Image 1 (cartoon, rainbow, N blue to C red):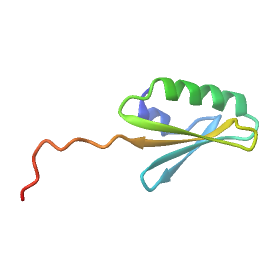
Image 2: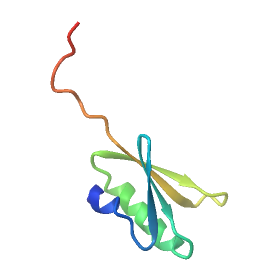
Image 3: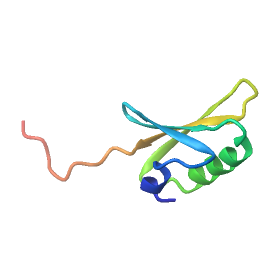
Image 4: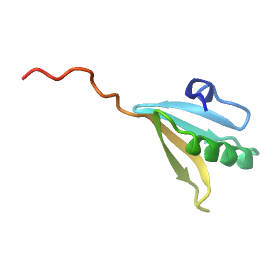
Length: 78
């Protein structure tokens, strides 16, 4: 799944820009569609970490997505 397309939002979810990543949240009335999307995002995560957040019934209602830290191509000077 393309991260840029995902971060545009959609009918079943919205996106909030967070300090170290992005928070995707399910929209009311679209809970099943959001959970299906969350499973797809978790399964296809490449280049980013996905942390599912759950509601009081232990169902995924939010996803925190953080880009993986990039390795530096040079060594720091001492």
